[in-house]
Amino acid sequence: MRCLLFMRKPKHVRKAELKETIQNNPFITDEALATSFNVSIQTIRLDRLELGIPELRERLKDVARQHHDEVKALTDEEVIGEVIDLQLDETAISIMEIREEHVFTRNGIARGHHLFAQANSLAVAIINDDFVVTGRANVRFSKPVKATERVVAKAKVTAHDDKWTTVIVESYVDQRRVFSGEFQMARGHQD
Amino acid sequence: MRCLLFMRKPKHVRKAELKETIQNNPFITDEALATSFNVSIQTIRLDRLELGIPELRERLKDVARQHHDEVKALTDEEVIGEVIDLQLDETAISIMEIREEHVFTRNGIARGHHLFAQANSLAVAIINDDFVVTGRANVRFSKPVKATERVVAKAKVTAHDDKWTTVIVESYVDQRRVFSGEFQMARGHQD
DNA sequence: ACTACTATTAGGACCTAGTCATAGAAATGC
DNA sequence: GCATTTCTATGACTAGGTCCTAATAGTAGT
Image (cartoon, each protein chain N blue to C red):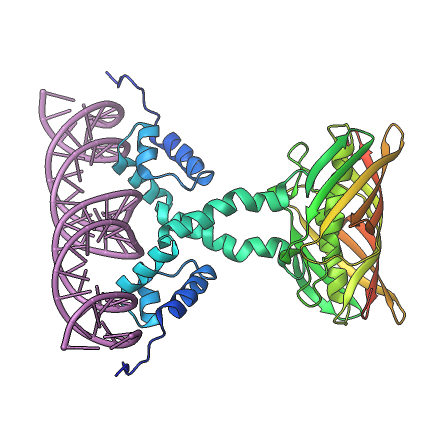
């Protein structure tokens, strides 16, 4: 009789669940997995082996390393998005891919400040001066952007005096304009 | 003679350097530290003990855990900053602490889009509707903000029709205004 | 010179969360 | 009934530590 009092799941089901469990909680030990799946530790280890899932400590190291490099990049990077063209004091283009973490969970639409961040950081990058900060900005979000879409931001310097530079940024998803803004950038020192 | 061929640093210097070394490379083992400081492993361990620095594995676990919770929070959180007061469709206040990763390395001034993000997300939060996106924004960065400063953003709903809500946000550091903006928020569905 | 003291090093026992390899038991397929 | 898959048990070994005890090196006070 195939009855262990506590019925077991077939191997492939367990393996699938195992993979998922570890994925959204990399901090779990084999021992905890064993009791939670009601099998022995060795079984868990065989499964991990077959699935190519590394041990707890390696997993943690991976998570830590990833974030050590990446976290900063999220906020700290010089330009939000990837610059693919840059003529100082003339034009610049960057691309940003909208991911799940950029959108509202309620409606799947990208939060405005990510589009702003892309445009703003491009406006900073385009200017050929060591000291640049944004003074004013007037922006418009014309179409909602969803996850997985790629936003292409095009910046253009339109005016220039000894202290201020005006940059126009327009962002597109598949040729459709989703964002436009005018940025007044302050150059030179002091506030 | 106090000469060990390779002169050692005094203890307090080593400890200070040790702390720093570990801080910007949590992945280093005691063994590596020992050879790099030219002392024995035990000495390193004593130092760590005195400095209250946990072992490699605990450090990695900490880094991993922090980021597991936090990384997403950086981009994914509903409101950037911490909401400390919220009257729907009336006023709202949030506080955000400017950290190293928010500022330009060149001049130590906060990137504009972080202030924008705080204000924008507060403007979203203040509105009592399931579907809200930013339509337009007109913002002004009046004073530069530096690392470690705490920015208090105050939002106020000033106008309201069936589709649009106007929100004014003003942000302060120690009573001094650093940012102000007018946000036109779209409510209800469709684009 | 002898003593007191701190700093450093060495050693052994133990820990966790694994690895790998081998062997045996249990359930299932046909 | 027997082969085959699947699971469990066992033992030996690893990294990167912990904690404790003990010995040594160098420096300072009297």
